[in-house]
Amino acid sequence: MSHGAKVQRWMDLLAALLVHNFAVTFEELAKEVPAYLESGKSRASLMRMFERDKDELRSYGVPIETVSLDDGDVSAYRLRVRDFYLPYLQAIAPSGKPARGPRHVDRYGYRALRTLELEADELAAILAAAARVRALGDPLLALDAESAMRKLSVDLPFDEISETDGITFIPPRATATEEVFERLGDALARRKCVSFDYRAMSTGQNERRKVEPYGLFFIGAHWYFAGRDRTRGELRNFRLNRMAAVAVNSAKPATADYTIPADFNLREHARSREAWELGDGTALEAVVEFRVHSGAAEAAARLGEPVEGFAERRVFRPRRLDVFARWLLSLQGDVVPLSPPELVEAYRLQIRDTLAIYTGGRKSAGPAEAHA
Image 1 (cartoon, helix red, strand yellow):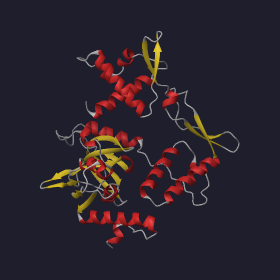
Image 2: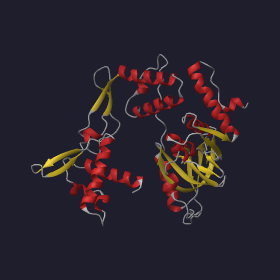
Image 3: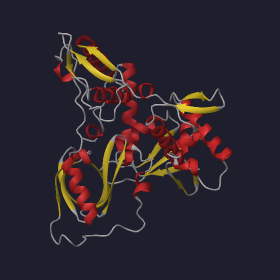
Image 4: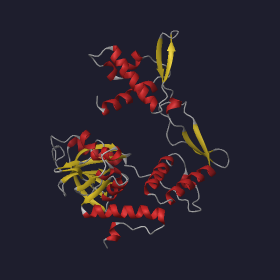
């Protein structure tokens, strides 16, 4: 059974448990989890599959309860909503009343969820803690702190707190508009080309693109749009929140502008992509050498392609060299870049900047300054 099939089975099981307010038996769950009704398998075999799923979910912290029915003759299972979902967040004004209620409407009936109330000084303490983490100078910790603040700021009014003592508010990342989704969906349905302004990740500049849409996928907390860039003549991924002024080709509305290649599979294209693969730049051929073949390095090696005649080398095709260099550095010297030269230099600068954090040395301004 593939990992994807197991995850789907877990999602079905969680959905089946959460929709009930009372304990249900395996037979009742099986009606809502297709994998537990698989033909050709005995009840004992399917029950063992369920027991493994239940135990693994429990190991990840999902509090699935086992309840005895009929004087212990029958087992039933329950997952309480209030034990599974995180509480709503709410800020309290000096008056003692809610300054701003949760922005998410409780449309699914999660009335059992608690509300975590935070005073203004507690919000300020959270901001100060995040600012302190960023001030440490570790780029990975800074990214984690910013990610956490963006998630919290969905419900908490950090923007209403005065910025003092160097504390700064990190606004939530921009999200794709409904208009972008609607126009891309229309273009996909009718196989029409789209043009749009795109803020390139590598340069920060807006460029007009013309693309043949192949599909939409969600990964790493962002929506992406896969399609063939007509100007560059290759398949690219575009993040929806970087797109603006999307226009669908209006010429010959009943006629398709292109065909999606028969060998293109959106599920495979989007599967397990790394951050350095999702940039908007041209993919480069990077050769790295693996000095250790165990642990994280072994897993990393499987993401690359073998190099004939060099068992310890792998080829990767990153679109974002800076992110790829940071990823290599996270492998703690077990993997080093060999080419291209700009990747080797970016890796060297990452090492220098990391050392500077702990030695008090001067941090570099990045590859651009180094080559100036």
